Length: 262
Image (cartoon, rainbow, N blue to C red; front, side, top):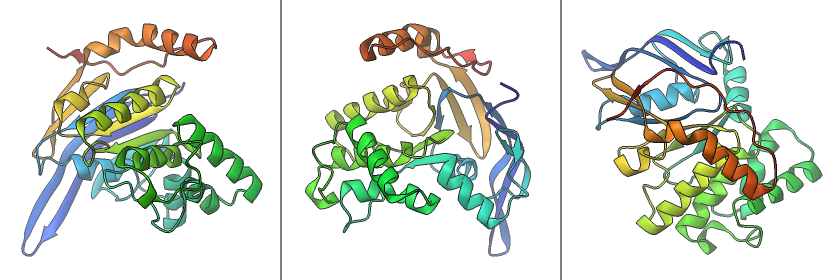
């Protein structure tokens, strides 16, 4: 692999609030390699949501460089940014963001509709993804006919359907009870072990503990960037996951250097 999947250099985001300026991000530099599982943490106002929006191409920095797969994002036009959001980033939101009048199958199809994929192809792919998240028997249920955990599973299937470079999860258990939250995090763990790069935005320590690396923000700056205990057990978890699926494990992706978290 040549270069990082995500490379942020001296990213700054300034919002004008009347006559004053707010530095939401103040010189953030961060590298994330393909296959990493990273949690972004910080108190309210730390800049973690702004960072998520920039990584997901929902917003652009005031200054600095953001490269995704080696391509500078700053110079992309609106159409290209829309393509990146559709094909390179899979979003999982706290509030699910499902179409209330559409069934699960159609909700999962949506990114492929925007990508222009043929109907038969996208329906087969959507069904495959719903099977993957354990909802193969709920394809024609609308969101109001599904539990909160099932709705989040639909959202995860939708996030994966275009085989994105990044799965970006913003407080994915925030609207769920603790038992359902554990189930959703187990599913995200499996998404990562299947080879996806996962970036998790959370303020909960037990949720961040699922990641292999925790980046903490405060006042728009990176306060710490440390590996968790799960980083050292990645190979064994990948092997166990592959054995459960009856396949050979994929080669582990390299991780960015980080200090073990105490």
